[in-house]
Image (tube, rainbow, N blue to C red; front, side):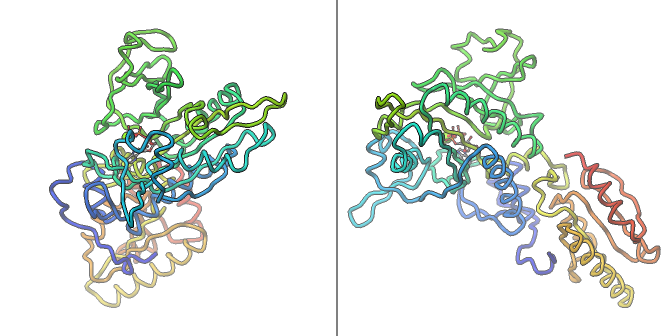
Length: 427
Ligand code: ATP
Ligand code: MG
């Protein structure tokens, strides 16, 4: 993509009420735009990041046998009354039109349970797992931390349906592995831990996945021995001990909840009268589990964790592009033209070889602005073509998370060398 074609420009300043690092950086870099508190537009570069996060989640859910669907965001009041959540779900956005009442989807048990009920009759129809990656709406009281707590935000919600608790437990354990894989692929595996949280009325615990970060709203107690944490909200019940090793050497940490898994058991199948016929002919309630991940919150989390004084530093897996190619300006018009045509050639070669390249081909912008934007955008590999490199038939190559770069000759070998350097990018 050519940067001159982007309608979005980076900004020098952002609204002062945005104090969180992720909001500051994402707004400055022009990855998102804020419409109102907790509600954002994803701009071209930001949308590429969000889509990459969603696709990693999608791939892992598919591997775990999840079937992707897309449920409506507009839902009738009646289904929420049936499960007793019209009054009890605090953050539900409710609307009324022509004497009908509706809720904007804040979660989808009310839709997915009757949906599966239409197709499930006997034990032969189970187990099943369905998921969606969809926009959720919640009237959150505090929406002041950028993408971390949206009023309109992206959620992956998976729901599983089983004949009995044993089968749910099997799938639940499988999902723990799948979730770990997702965090690893996103570059936060080393700072994201399974966390014991309250399980509501239906099981002793649920599990959250908490990513350690100073900005986090959650407080957890981490057991370094078992590599699990306990949410503050249940630590009293556990007498400040790890539920796995019973040790009391716990470290207090602030963290961001990036996902959670929950045994719903019969909470919703019971409310919806969702039963199946077992092999022995008896009629039994379907047992359910649910598994959430927040892609937009993850994008905010990555921005919070991976940055420096000059801007974002995206992990490879989610960076909007792999290469940021800068063609520098020059006062001498013929030199300038040479730089542009060399850059054009390189851009085409790299793109044809499968690299995702953003080419800063702007002629109006100063060289200083180009370097500044490049640091701000946080694309892993930066290639610079200027007068000096052109004379030496070379290109300046630098990784975003390293101080110094190197000069590489523009030759047949260049692409291979770039691959090596790119593979060394730590995140
Ligand atoms: P929290 O305690 O942070 O409000 P939650 O327990 O309400 O989260 P769930 O309803 O289980 O979260 O949603 C599943 C996932 O969706 C969460 O783990 C989180 O990653 C994401 N999520 C929840 N609320 C928001 C929000 N307001 N903005 C962005 N992501 C969210
Ligand atoms: Mg919540």
